[in-house]
Length: 168
Length: 168
Image 1 (tube, one colour):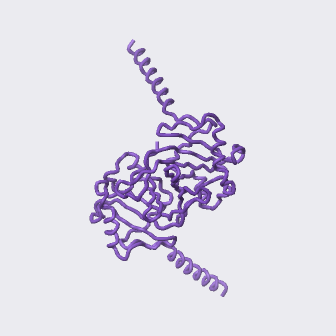
Image 2 (cartoon, one colour; image 1 turned 30 degrees about the horizontal axis):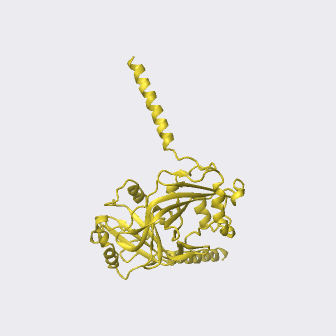
Image 3 (cartoon, rainbow over the protein chains, first blue to last red; image 1 turned 180 degrees about the horizontal axis):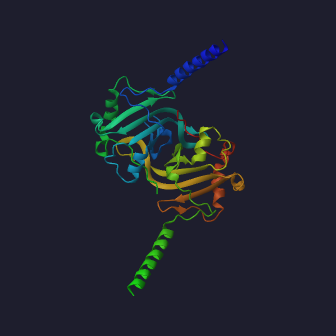
């Protein structure tokens, strides 16, 4: 009797645990792209600030992106490159009124280079997750055309706005 | 005779090589701090933009800093933490006029936490290297008092202006 109760308890705990983990998992973007693992640990490519929507951004790159940037292989960027652009609301520093710093987190967005897989969007897969609860952006897979449309002015730069920041 | 000439040539090449390498090496700061190795590969802590001197910055941290930031151990920061603040002139993006991006590199500066070694400057060692040729900042070791003076308003935050940016 005791053993059956123990087994039942373990079983229930397992069910609760799996359900909890599924709830925590970030849902894929509507075009099937899943959030790249470990982007928080990627290395620096550049930063930017947009006064039109009061946000600041840091652009990180995976190892392939960092290697390409350091070797000047950036137009086109090679397949395998992934950029993460992390976006926050502008905030004024409490002790330095002329300094703008990252405030609330807005979203994180990715560009994944695969010149065969993403032909219809310039060789880049686009994805974005909104807010601290990381909701996928876009109603259906067509959302990527909106991203691509915005990047069209950068066609001569492999559709990439970011220029790697110079560090000696 | 031929062997002696060969040895002489090799010897001369070695001398030239060593002299060249020494010339390339970044000189230590006037307080003896040497440029931390590999800071370009450190991970992200935050970014900022200063409208008073038209510069933008990215703050990276060594492994100890990243671990402390992720565990909320930031006031005080533990010994062993090092921050690198990389500074560029503001530049307007050529295709997005309301976007500010990193232009010319200005300098890189460091804060190194060692509560015993750097008692006179709040437990932090300060150092800065200017320009693409990485010239040490400061005439003598007293320069660090200038850095520390500027950081005094942040005394209640362990003398650190930077707040780690939130990433979900």
